[in-house]
Image (cartoon, rainbow, N blue to C red; front, side):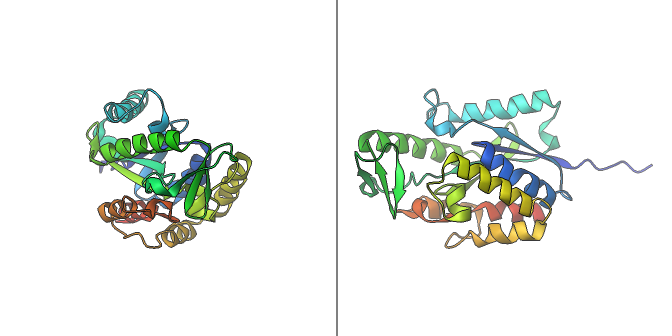
Length: 234
């Protein structure tokens, strides 16, 4: 009897429930021929903003997520297709001059190509921290001997998909549920809409990151998620 070839597991690390609902089922359907299953681990917010995480221990944080997942599911590195980390850029690679202090806003909010914030100094501090953390993570090509890739939505998922950078939580939930309903079983439609979000981003993993790190490109509406879909197809 021929030995059955075991397909791989794709672990997706993302920030919140709306990311999970938007991506999970549609990606699972798209990748079903190449991947046995897709598992999502939610970090309950961007790890770069957590007080106990900095550029010195951020890699270890991701290592721990992957290690715990492997242990919980009795998996080895050879069982993985890859580990994929999904982030919202939040426009953090923008120039400091694009951050405007405005005491009339309660929290940071995008206005055109600027970010209005009640505390410019604190926002710049948080953004610089996130810059350092994700540049550090970009240096890592493997985690726990598994290929490790980072993909982004800019300024966030709702901006990239719907041009709504300041969506409320209730709007995020409604939008993600509607997206899931439309694309969970439409692989070509899912591919098409993700491809449409490239805009000026090069369809290449390394070059897509070079783009988002340059000037104010991280406030542009875009995503490099299609690069993942092309990796899966190949």
